[in-house]
Amino acid sequence: MEGNRVLPITRSLSPREIANLYRIAFRTNRLFNFAVVRSSISFTAVFPVFKARVIQFFNDDLSDLFRNFNRVAAFVFRDVLRNRINRTPILFSTASQQTGSTSYRHRKVKT
Image (cartoon, rainbow, N blue to C red; front, side, top):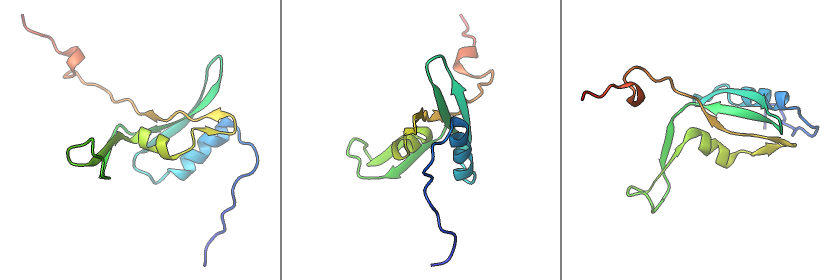
């Protein structure tokens, strides 16, 4: 076997270091946008942000007519990755989409 040996990180990581690891790990993933650290009064969390896309694949899901799995990208990553690293919560998010003047909220209804 050739290549670099990978060793797990055994020390504690700061939220900023965790966000940076997401940036490195997902730098070639087209669904990943960015990762940020946000603090509130009660906690600090890392927010990996993914594009607003639906991921669909066949998986024998009997609740879907065509047996497809359908989920927003951020929630697929949430299901397969850790939701907490050290004591830092990881809150997977979907990037906001800008709405143009044709969005439902901005349309004027003729009376």
